[in-house]
Amino acid sequence: MTFASASVIVRRVALASVVLVLCVGVTACGGDDDATTTETTTEETTTTTEAAAGREIFVANCGSCHTLSDAGTSGAVGPNLDTIDLDASAVEMQVRNGGGGMPAFEGQLTDVEIAAVASYVAGSS
Image (cartoon, rainbow, N blue to C red; front, side):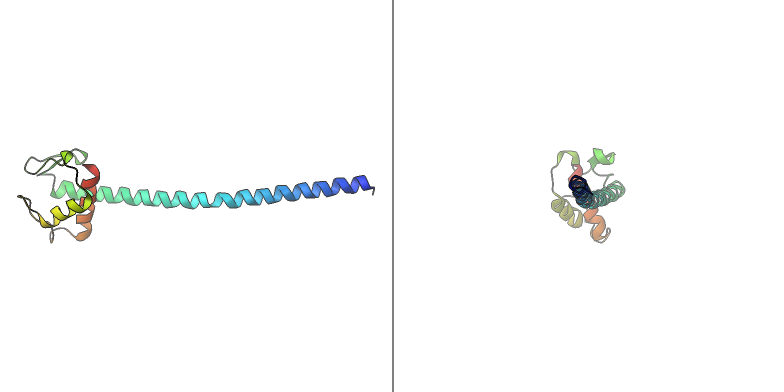
């Protein structure tokens, strides 16, 4: 074997090594993206499920008194919730304790149901 042949072989082995290292590196870097996508999708699914539960609870228990376009309700006894900007904690307190003509729902709805409807109303109004 000549010196030129050995040099070509060494260069090919070196090039193959570099390509292998790059392929492994690219593959390893791409793995985290899938976990983030799955995590985000799980959060979005949970949020969507909670919103659907909150909407269902609202329609069944609140819609006869309150208007809320997102829920398709047009009650006229209580305030129009489309025009009120409340955060979830304020809505939760009102649902739990009632007041101003509204009955208290604590004891009629579970804590989870109250939190779901409060989150839904705050996000929809």
